[in-house]
Length: 308
Image 1 (tube, helix red, strand yellow):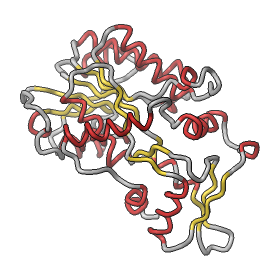
Image 2: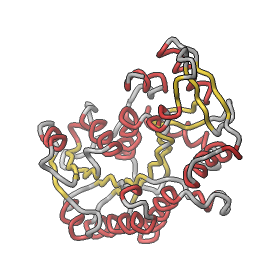
Image 3: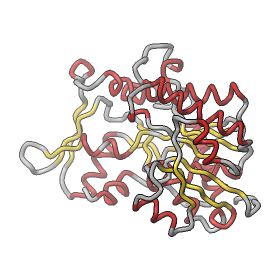
Image 4: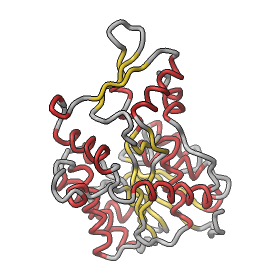
């Protein structure tokens, strides 16, 4: 279980009203021990908006900061023992922009003496695949920030979210007769996909790093491994209707180069690269032992939550 931590410790959570940061805030607030030992400062663009004020009512200090300004970040994180950092590549769809934001955050943490920068990172795809997959910029950008964190010597922990379950419903469509569903994907029927129910589970992985000494170790934030056939089985369990899986041949794929590389990274490299299965298993053990959380969300749980 979690070791005893002084009450004075503060964690600052970027994106606290968003998908990943919000999960981190909830995991700490809802944990019987962490909620007593850690105070939370939430970072958002607008501290006056309703979802930010809802967190204030739960005891979260809400402040505004701009990831494009080191001074703004430094002012926001001053006094923090830990900082959870996440950036949004799709804000400008620019690798350079996201890398600069990550460097700004790192420099501010270094200047503020932050003991643990918990960075939401992703695999360095172009390196793992020796350049074969080189279009997955929103993965490589976060990995480049990770390298910078190590380069400047900022104490840090790295959490790597798996493939979001929320990406999947758009691929599940009613069949032509309306009697059931179809799932068409580039994967093989037995492709093992590490999936993450972000609201339910991501915060557990981040919170588990609060009890460890920062050592640049990776936490693989995956709720579990699920195949396309598992997805169809979950659809059938939730709807009572059949779901057929169709494997899309590579030559018929019509999406973007970035999406193609994303799917191929899963199909050919287990998403995380070498050691993926062992990394997920180890991370599950840590979350269970350190935080005492009991289990992770299944894809069926996720579908029921969103009301398919």
